[in-house]
Amino acid sequence: AKGMNASPGAAVGKVVFSSERAVELAGQGEDVILIRRETNPDDLAGMIAAKGILTSRGGKTSHAAVVARGMGKTCVCGAEELEVSTGERRFTAPGGEVVSEGDVISIDGTTGEVYLGEVPVVDSAVVEYFEGAQPDDDLVRAVDRIMGHADSVRRLRVRANADTPEDAARARRFGAQGIGLCRTEHMFLGERRQLVEDLVLADGDEERQAALDALEPLQKADFIGIFKAMGGDPVTIRLIDPPLHEFLPDLVDLSVKVATSPDVTDKDRRLLAAVKRLHEQNPMLGLRGVRLGLVIPGLFAMQVRAIAQAAAEVPGARPEIMIPLVASVQELESVREEATRILAENGVEALIGTMIEVPRAALTAGQIAEAAEFFSFGTNDLTQMTWGFSRDDVEAAFFSRYLELGIFGVSPFETLDRDGVGRLVRIAVEEGRAARPDLHVGICGEHGGDPDSVHFCHEVGLDYVSCSPFRIPVARLEAGRAALTDTDSDTR
Image 1 (cartoon, helix red, strand yellow):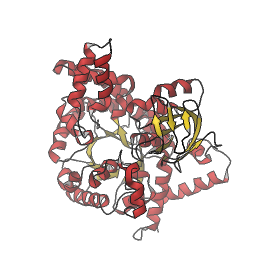
Image 2 (tube, one colour):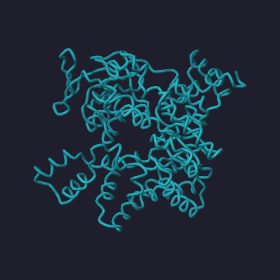
Image 3 (cartoon, rainbow, N blue to C red):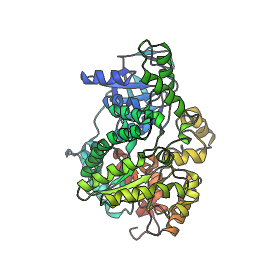
């Protein structure tokens, strides 16, 4: 079968259909491939444990693809030819072949191909080099020379999208010059989801503050680890972005439990009521990002306080606080006022800026720059909103036909659409810097690691690109090539 080449590499292992099973078998020393229709934050532990991930839905900016690339994990997404039955723990291939849990398959994240059985694989000498090994290999020595030359001529700085101290340390080994996107919502997963549930179920200000007080020291510890790992390089921290329903049980599963389980509790009923209350027809355009921070008192303040206190404990820490999904300068001003006060109370300095991911933000960038010290383009959502595409649904549904018809030369989620999305970026850069000449501007969407998109970022005058740790070498190389091919560059 074949799907989308969502995260490069090769992986071989036994098929499993749940995160729990992946963790169990991996703990016994087995190599496993996690199979899901599509992944969600609940699957993170299984994704970490698996050698590779295969999904029948989603595209190159789906949850599975983005998380896999960040971990350097092989992933094939949108293999819609596969009929996946997680309940029966099997999938059916296009030719009728049934693959059951425990059977061995191989996946190629570079081509998107899926094979039955074990296909021989070899380690990448280049990746080993960037991970700290020093193999005596002509290819590696050549890479070292080329990367050194690229770094000597490039103007664009290269940062990493990293959410943990481990990711941050790996990013520095790959040559990152800071973190361009630290997603704080990833810090609310696992056992901490219970604290998020407590926040959602809070009855009044006192219970809500108690839930926030429980989360704050955990966030602070995370930030301390990241600041230490980055050794004084800038760290852009995005305050919580996704809607809260992503941290709660599934509506259907919880409804069934409440309706049929003999062990249902009062908390289950309250949780179901909360899930129904937060349910949205289109949650990615609903209560999330800055809207969430303005609606839930104390949520953003808790995160800013954790950042400030962590920075105060780590000498040389350089935090940058990013407010997500801003569409109006008034939204940013409201959050900025409180954040500035908290930073001052802790004796910490930090840049405060926003992620430009809504078309209106790009078109009113001159106003927003009056309250923002930096912009970071979240081109995943900006592409989604500009085209009117749901990135989790459309790639596998009709992108192949669009490519055949010549409507696309390449997926706009893979390479930045210069004519549409790119024009919004140009407008925002020009008008933002006209209002604030010292405005720092970068990109943190997945396009930050795409070669053609890196050249565009150089052309429009961005200060840096940010991408997953494993794409940093490519971004460094292309930033150097962009400088050398720029006819106005003194380094040509």
